[in-house]
Length: 164
Image (cartoon, rainbow, N blue to C red; front, top):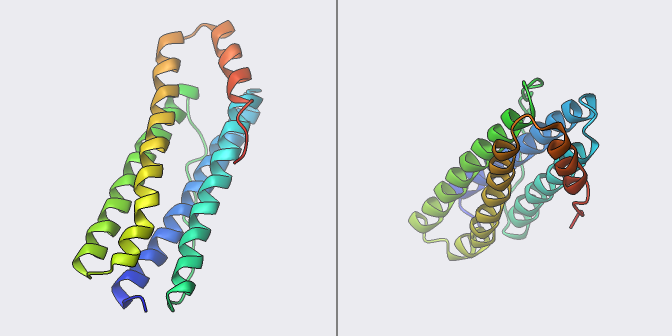
């Protein structure tokens, strides 16, 4: 059985993961409006991954005898000045999520909940990958600057992202 503290914290994380999906869908919508379909697709795949993360927490709580309590999801930002600003925000957001996951691991250690700690290890590893990918795109966007042909090529490359 999962403790009340873990249950409450994991319910908050479900909300954070679903907010992440909303944020990436919002970014996808702006990329579509900018006629950058590859960027939009990348963000759509990212949004699906975030929803899958929420569902992992959802299932875990029920597997451990906890209860899922969904809360309202805050509306995300809807406008950015350019692709670089969006990916910088995505990178900062992933860093925030990493901090939240580490906080959950700290709580699981404090609660001596080894099952939750093991469950969270997957998310700890996943966040390394999430931050890496967002930062790589930020660095690439910084390198290409305002070169429209390079942005076009990056858009085509990002559009090839496969859903897992």
